[in-house]
Image 1 (cartoon, rainbow, N blue to C red):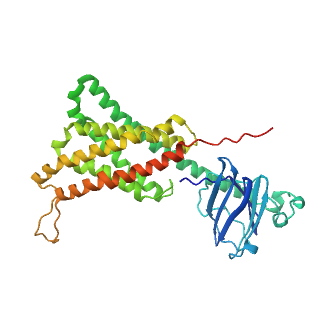
Image 2: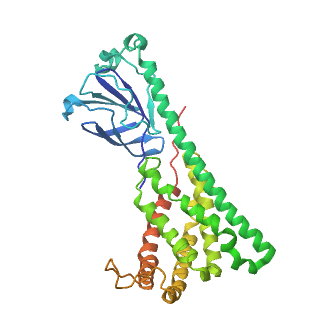
Length: 375
């Protein structure tokens, strides 16, 4: 399930960090502070309606030891939650987070650059704004550095948008070539599919390993293990099963498999681009989380047919089979491995993928709650 985060506005003095959490009608907020990590969760009304909101931050430096009375002050208002966190050391932080990039929901509170006394005051009516340039002459330099964080984030978005665009264009090219050839040659075009688009498909497949690296470098959320197995499973079929066996390259199942793979990707990559720039295009979201219902099982069926058809070929050629004796004292029988891989692909693999996508579909396509403001 996707965790929803509220908008959080922050400011600081030498001693304190001030957070304004943009949630209405909050009851019993939960804020945990440990060293330089904070976690917040609460039920309230925010940008996504009334639901549970939560966020966590790794701060630039440490806070005071975990003593609720000393470390944090939480104040509830009808339209916000205010939190004051006390720094362990008196110092000006160049940014709030340990990482140079800020989450999209974290903003600078330009309206609340208070003096130390104002942030420490518990009576809101006694808070007085001061000339920030007099209190902190270097504040605007700090804000420029903060904006550099946004620029770095923009560079990351540009890279991800270009990557997704290149993949979209590549798979569109594969589909276009296959379509044009079928229009000209009809069914006779099927046997030559790998000859004409195999190189492009191999390049695009190798490029997909960047998706394994993106979460490692913090470009995308989630772990790298699941993308690695997904990309490697397709690469195994493409390179080990099709590229290495010329007799398999002319089989109709290769054409069908390329159509399914390409159709999935020409939907997936535009959806990712729209999400990068916070554009909710319902038809694109619906296609992304609906087309997998027929395409994923058909894709796995085609992959399984490719593997099954290759077993007699690999028994004949002994390709990738290692026999005893050898200097490593190790034996490997490729046809037996393919039978085991086939069982793992068709049953547990298909079940896990379909279950995961079903959960995502429920979250992404559930009706949104619209909160109307009363004038």
